[in-house]
Length: 262
Ligand SMILES: Nc1ncnc2c1ncn2[C@@H]1O[C@H](COP(=O)(O)OP(=O)(O)O)[C@@H](O)[C@H]1O
Ligand SMILES: [Mg+2]
Image (cartoon, rainbow, N blue to C red; front, top):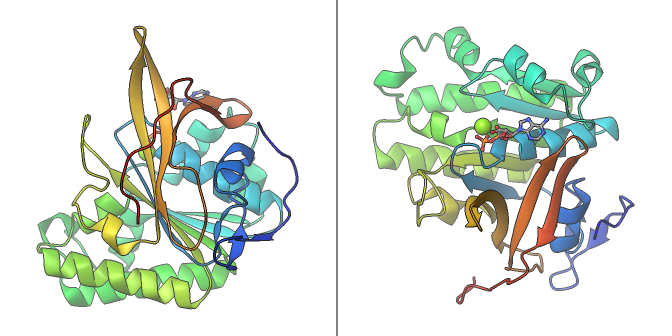
């Protein structure tokens, strides 16, 4: 189902500029891509492909000359580079050339003098953290920013009010600059929610849900677009396969659509 070509489209439904994710099958499902400068939550349990999805999107854009920054909370940049090694879309030269900037969130906390993020970030810490992320994006001249995982960052705030205000401010800051945000949310297995805290999905423009589905004894990965403000899209569930050539997405034979909608 892959359709080649990286043409920038306008959404037929809203007229906003669509920015391809670079994952051809995903762009087809999204009828061109995600609205430029939008905030997209990529939610799913462990191993469903959140990190790979972020890296494929940012690596393909970087190969196309569009810089990206990715902040990691639970693995070092070295480890992530090693994990991405087998994928064709990734090359360490993207990192060496500064087109793909991989930042270690733990190091960022240290630079900011936040010694114990686990014991609770203050609102002031949140402002400093956001300023540091913004600086990394500005320095790289990035068009895309990924935070993997957002859950790892939000878990450092000790109350829901701070979580909300930090996330709102982050979305506002980067939306205003036209930077597309990809934020990952870690869900427990079998979760019926779309985000780890149950609020992130309400504050972002789009939600892509990754899951594990069992089919005849096999564990398959699946992808479903739950919402995408400003863009038309299918709400069907698809089977997602991680191959050395990148992510491939095919319709589930017996696909179904959830009721509701935006
Ligand atoms: N080169 C590869 N080809 C196919 N699958 C891979 C490859 N490398 C890793 N994987 C699979 O990807 C999974 C990890 O996906 P990842 O994007 O890290 O998920 P998440 O971030 O949601 O935890 C691993 O469990 C492994 O099965
Ligand atoms: Mg991950």
